[in-house]
Image (tube, rainbow, N blue to C red; front, side):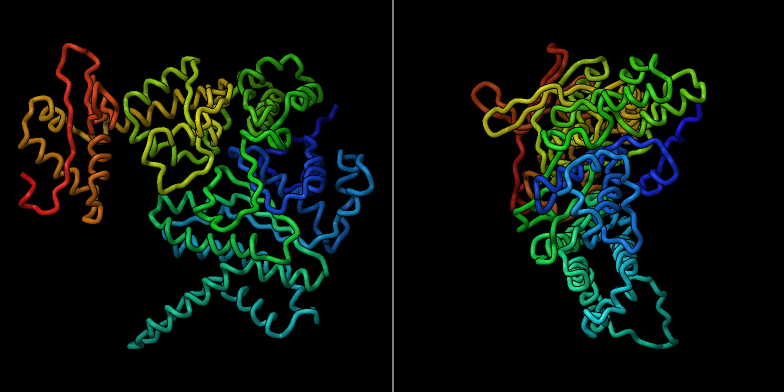
Length: 535
């Protein structure tokens, strides 16, 4: 028997069908959108869980393409539904973008890459420039966006002085144009087709994540806030929109004023079966490739994720595993280890304390932890608490939900490691990050000074650390409080905690020895408004 090839790295729906790749049918997702009629849908799932393929599928079903693509859905589940769903097939103008490439070492570079993506979508619809349904001003504006999306090196003549004020005005004009570009393109498409537009945006959160760690977060926030608000809130030409990403970014960050998004995260009960392979789908794939005897092994390695109430397999790793087994590989591999961005987790672990390390060791041993979960992510706040580490580990697929309960206004999750593949990642990668964090900075003199009550040395060491890590603007008591707590958490044999109740009061920083025969230290942090008042 000749088996269908494996669609490894293929996220174009038409290519998967036309080239005869093995496809796990998720087309009933189309029916869900038509039935529920939510205007703005934001899906958050871990990396490599089929988001890009689903976006491509939606495009090929809904878009009013120049060539007939209806045949690629023949025999799929959506075609076994009622006629009222067929009425939507290939009837809409569609804007489809991926912001995965919207990153760079500076805001300028990231902005250029975003312009390229936007300009590429305008060029895909460049037939609009030949239409009499667009006014000459609209065509001129349309052409301006295409031209400005292509980076052209500036040539400067000798001794020529650049008009900085004029250049600044031109840049502001250009950024305003691109931030409202999707709304403009929507208006043009509606005018041409006489139907409202569907907007599909994949990896909507990637530019923010990259900007945060590159140091231009506020600039990217300003641009994306206008970009999304114009396209999704004040856009009368919008029928509905679908955005996919890894993290649920706070409305206060980029969705300010947007009150209508239907945000479907991994703890939502809706759409749980459409990202990843369900147990029935995995079993069907094993039967097709005559690997039924591998069911326990593939479940042990790649199953265990819980999206809403649906148990799913990691689709990327599962497909790679099937290919390996058909090629007579002897053992499963951790295929997902190097596919997702680990920058955020690495940074959070870098500031984690011994308590967090103990909890991770407990998880690796098969235990569970219970933590409050905050779905909305505000990147500017991710370093403020170790609780944020558990948020990121959960929403990026490194932990799974065991149970959920509410206490007061907070949602708590009991969590564990999903499977053997993820446990391997913890053992091999996260353990190394902890070890590297300890090795990078030698704080021996500072810790010795604390225990010996050597005030002069302690002061000198703190001044050195502050000089290397903060600016004059970081001059508030709560900053120094957090800074000192983070520095002192590295003391071996001790646990530094902040603002914990004890007895009749609450100390600012409490350095507690694990061996109760040793000395404990309590620090009270004070701020002076003038230098001469410090003593």
